Image (cartoon, rainbow, N blue to C red; front, side, top):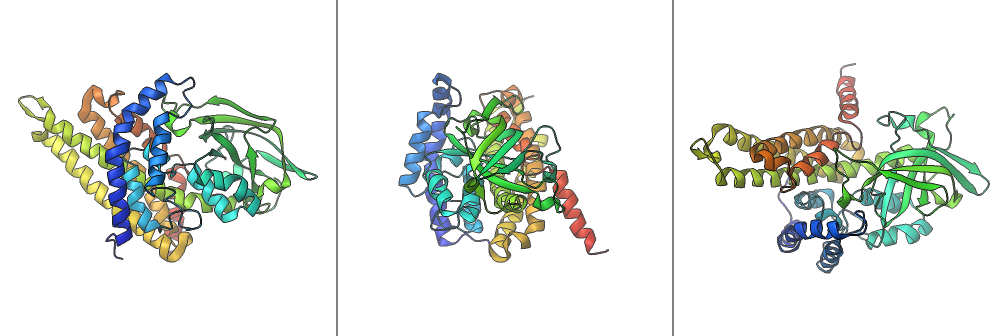
Length: 404
């Protein structure tokens, strides 16, 4: 395994780093000011659209899609260090480059499983950054960590599907630019194979019976920059049968295909969050004095910074190995490593952010630094895309199988 960046990666990293310094970091306070003045907190600040236009001009657009027909044509190994850079400003940079979840996963689903009409109607405007989307899977009344528990019904009625169910924490759904939901439910709830009961359908937001009931908070944050996380009710919503993605019973497999790349994207962005936290720790440590000497000379602070650096280097190597395996042997061949990074990365980054918050004192939990909000996002990723315990259970079974 050679993890040296190739020429194209080096070129893209240089462009992206310059874009971050020149445009993204200066736009962070501007976005906050503009959002406070908006009629709705869910509207997009003007500076975000300016960033998107600038990113497109520079060719820093749809970097996550390996298919050159739709994206930049980068491998997972080439994209990984770029996702890390965008993670340094998680509420602006991914959106600015059209690499923000859940749109990334939804675009991958449509590119891989959508038919030509679905691609024309929904994938193309998503690729252009003209609309946003949401993925409606998690439900409040069942343990959604086990996707087979999903109770939303997708019933065939002639040339239509009728969808009935209640979803929550549907990321991006509060954004008025969110025009399409990918909804997962059961088309065959009594089927013998529990992994063939689910299907996915496309539901336009303005379809009668779709109600975005409320915004769900995350550790008290409404996460405006992400488009919010909504509770959504589908009350006998009717869509044409042509809105089925793939085949009936294929929903579980599509979900697994969607979540593999999503997990590595999250992990690389998390490493970027950790890098920014280390930078903030160091700046704080050399600028503050306590008990007669700079914080940078306090042994406990030095330990925190050293441990954070070691942890980030370990995580990055594991994630790069995973990206390399995904490119060389496919997502199935990298299954163990994908689960390993999903378990290890959020847990370790949460610890680094916790130390950074501690070092900043009251400032660490304030709105004057990004640490508290980023901490909430990182901690949430221990639940998103499957709770860590689900991945631990699966990984342990795979290890034990060698001895049984």
